Image (cartoon, rainbow, N blue to C red; front, top):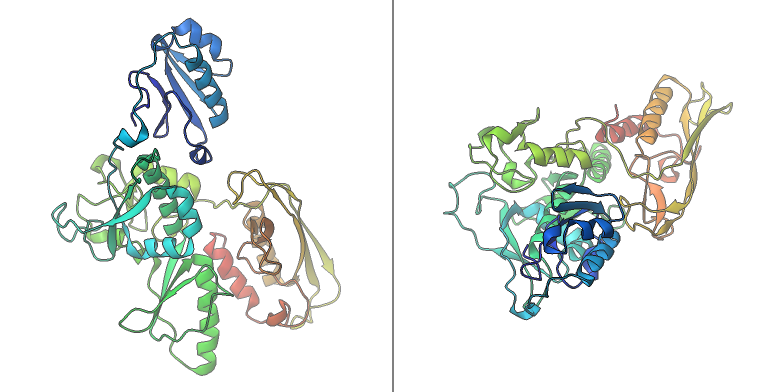
Length: 451
């Protein structure tokens, strides 16, 4: 982006440039791992910049490359510009600056609907005062019928437009939205039912979006684990009433731009960056979905699953706070339904602490938790115990969020791996007997790549 001070070559990488004056505070929370590039000849010479760069930096001739946090680099910018020997250039007021145009994105209508209806708060944080604007189809832009093409079925073209007089950087918002869109789409699955009339699911499944298309039936969209739980619930009900099982749409059909990878043309778009994939940079996974090699590497750094269908490639790592313990002991009393065996008692403890960047409210305290769970001490129970140990070591058992029992935020909560926290009372009281529990637990672990 062009600097606010014409002629001043003082650049922060990450689609953000600093001139004289500070950027708006609301954007600072998104800027991490920043690199400041200073052209020393334009700011008093290399000797002056070397004196000001007290922290670690790399020098390439007269160019200084300084990594750091936003606060550190903001202070350095003030020092560099405070006694700058160059006279300041005139700065146009925001109302007279024309924001740089941003390239429209072609995204899945279904994913966008989910984000707008279930992630509205996060979307607003990303947008700032920019407006997410839907554009009319442009069928002539690319070959008709190409996956990801503007106007392709199930897709919509969007762009970001700042209001008049705003200094919000739309290109930066675009990049933030792409990252958030991809992370959301990678964990979504669609469940299509032949019949509608579903009960109210909002209290039990708050992250599921239920829609009733004109053709009849119902479409449920949500995170893999939550859809799996709903499928299990519907399967139990259908088996008791002898009704047909719900029809499930494969999750790879979710993002419209990459619905049929085996028919994609040479000019197919990368579902991550939304740009055409160059042949030399193309990476196709064993699930047949293709991406730009660099885009896929970045996505795998976040989560090693196919961003389209969710197939696991590698080891998933969760956001469970560090420092917790998982202790196991045996109890002589049996569980209902497993009278021949002793009982495995698992005690989890996650201490309170401060949230990291990967958590909902970085820098804010969270409240820890202690939980006790039970398994039968038979072959299947011990096999599940080993899987739970792997899940705990991969930080997948707990997360930080809102407690479903107390309604309080910033609490350590279960992370969609259901445990039996009571020895009696049956499924309605999270206890035994429950003949299908161990099988369901394996299914939940499999969703997270543990099997």
